Amino acid sequence: MRDMGMEGGRGRRMHGRGGHPRGRRMRRGDIRTAVLAVLAEGPGHGYDVMQRLEDKTEGGWRPSPGSVYPTLQLLADEGLARSVDQDGKRVYELTASGRAETQRRIEEAGGTPWELNSRADASFGQLRDNVRQLHMAARQVAMIGRPELVERAVAIVRDARKQLYGLLAED
Image 1 (tube, rainbow, N blue to C red):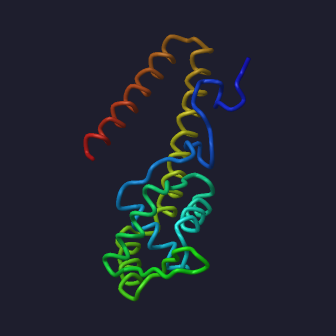
Image 2: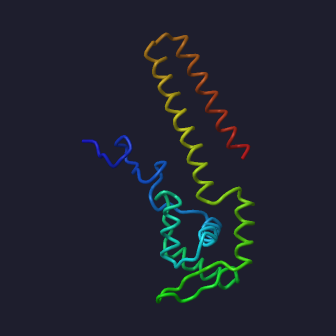
Image 3: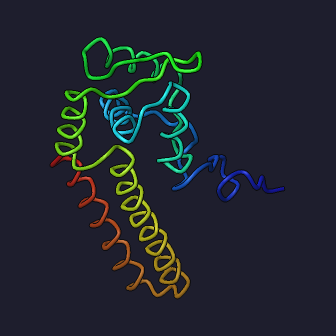
């Protein structure tokens, strides 16, 4: 019986947008930029920041308290944010230097972490879709079964694989 929580029943759990596991991790610099960007939109306490980041990624990423709270404290220690007690909660807001740092980081990166991930997800989706289409075309060639067509198809796929590894070698 097929597990409907799996993609194609093959063991890869599908959660959130783009098929990425819920709760995936961001790189160390991304959490800092993400927290700065969210605070640039308005003050918030730790849970607010986590919730807003989850909303920004449409549920694709929810940072842990173990990454958000230390980041907030570090931003405060560096003078990029300040905290005030509000209704029994520590609320953080950016300072002028924090706003400047946020703008600089987002401009250097080419967008917020969630915008960059969204672009990467779209590109990955295009690659995945084209690989599926290639697979379907190869199956159709195989069904026809004419040896000369199969040999040409093998050469095309082999060349594509080599070109893809060539891209990785350039990186």
